[in-house]
Amino acid sequence: MSVTCHIINHRKQPRILVRFPHNQDFNNRIKKVPGVQWSQTHKGWHIPDTPENRKKCGLAAALPIPVKEQVPAVQKIKSNQLSENNRQQLKLFTEKLVLKKYSNSTLKTYCNEFMQLLLLLGNRNAQDLTAEQLKNYMLYCNLKLKLSENTLHSRLNTLKFYYEQVLKKEKFFWEIPRPKKPLQLPKLLNETELAKLFNALTNKKHKAMLFTVYSAGLRLSELVNLKIKDIDSKRMQIFIERAKGKKDRYVNLSPVLLDILRNYIKTYDPKPKVYLFESEQTFTAYPTRTVQQIFYSAKNKARILKDAGIHSLRHSFATHLLERGTDIKYIKDLLGHFDIKTTERYLHVSRRSLVNIISPLDELMAKEKIDW
Image (cartoon, rainbow, N blue to C red; front, side, top):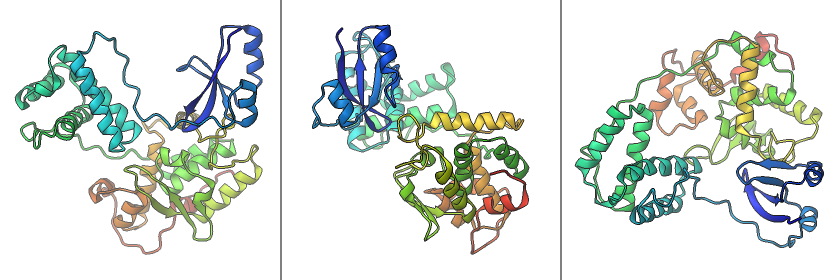
């Protein structure tokens, strides 16, 4: 039986991909390897990249580990769907995004949005379009395709990047107006709902995750990328590294949260080694989708009917601080916002200055009966 092994990157970690023709006996054997996972994308099993596993797979111990591929996975296209010229333009567009170190999420969004224009163009060259033609294209996206305001903004940003950054056509889009975004207030959970949500969780690791998001006002991506070394118990701070916009920041470490995290690390098995919340299978950062499922499961169990996601914990953190009189400038820094206008969405509640910022989790634990 022919078995092939090579190194891949999975969630920013090197893994050994093992492929082989369907064989039930071999299938059952590889399932017993610690940390093994199935990859639907690669159509094969992948296992932790360790010297022992490399030896078993016949890979050299010094085999270089490839850098995570930066080019995003754009939608699959057939060779006859894009002209040779537009295929080259897509390549130039992608390379420029990579060189400017855009995030993987932005890379994927921009490339997929650009693809929509290229597919529509057929044999016409993308670089030859005029501002008037692009204006008509945006009208088509709005009136015919009925795209949302957010998608229209993404599409316009994509075109702006291509024509101004790649083709160097300055001020090419001043004639095309941007669609007005709806002003949406943050979706919040009140304190009673938060107590019900936290009490609905029985797993200490899951509970510690949601406590951390609410206590420090973290984004989901910031939570899963937290490392044990980022928790500074002496200075009572949490270091958030390279968050949205590649911006580092410090947030307050609540004394209550510190006790919760210490208890979680002390009692949970297996103990985390690098990341504060690690996957038990891969020992890498916890999958964001799994954390979302944990939140929705607790929300349903608590019978909370509000249309709220895990990001609502961050919104609740900011709003509850405002209600307690914390100055909005402090909240802006804690949330990691670039612009104070982003934070001003929370100004539908009171604004009072308060020098000492106390995490709302501290008062919540003292007021409500929450199991831990």
